[in-house]
Image (cartoon, rainbow, N blue to C red; front, top):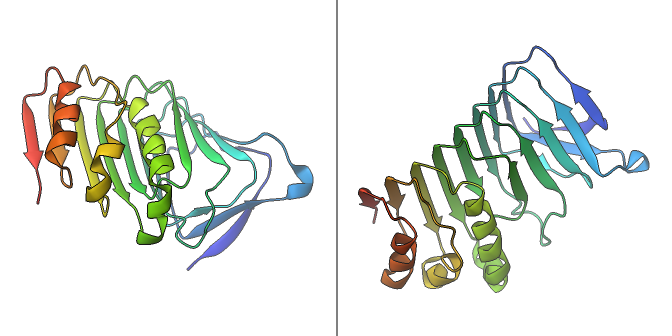
Length: 206
């Protein structure tokens, strides 16, 4: 069941250790507009969000100093415009990161050097192909946040014809030893492998 939750400017749940949410539309009161909505969870270790709609005008700032696992599936298929708000995650303990979505909303990982395992699944709908350059830029920004990762699953769907665009200006993955890919052409694969100097396992799907 989908429901709407109006967020106050600041929330603090001191003892919460795991948060799993699904089917929630997050909104805010525009009359109390501020730069960020701050959600403070000092004890949180696991954050999971699926099929939620982040429709706030403000950025959402997650203050989660002990967070170890962050997993989010975020889609904006019902909107013809990119979301202007971003979700910012502040954690120095984050080791596992998972993203599934259409890149229409920015995920900003602040101080993400501790991430060792990452899974990124990107699906581009046919009606978004005219914005492929911008979406490729956002994909590269997301990958730069996890350039210290050791194991990476990177899956693209419906973007094979534009694979080269998504692998331009990639960061160097200096610690990456395991990489799993699906839709990628030869030229893009070479660009990616060039930036993975100590890779020892490559898995190609499809």
